[in-house]
Picture 1 (cartoon, rainbow, N blue to C red):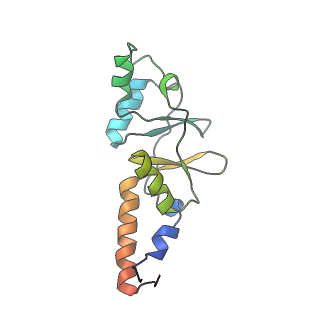
Picture 2 (picture 1 turned 180 degrees about the horizontal axis):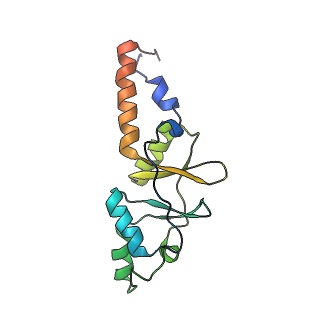
Length: 148
């Protein structure tokens, strides 16, 4: 059986797919600040860093609302009190397809990208990866196919 297999986009590294970088959240940031940032970026996940290293994730759609529902003031509650310490991330030298799988399995719009010392490099968007893979697939099929 022969299939059109886009070789390059699946092997392409995340570091090549990073479109933009954002300011890092700190454990002392208020839940309200984090919530506002998530809304502004249109994401359901943001990395929290300490000294530039990934220490947690703000991963509820609206952390301010979530904190309020538990009786906490979003303006005074720190993200370190509510952040998820079960961190989902990818390394900058991971391939795009693997990162996309992680995001789709966990229903994440974005994924933190870190280096091997866990320093945050960027935040990559699921839609950006999908678009890169679609484009590379289209480019590849115009050139030829790989038989399987």
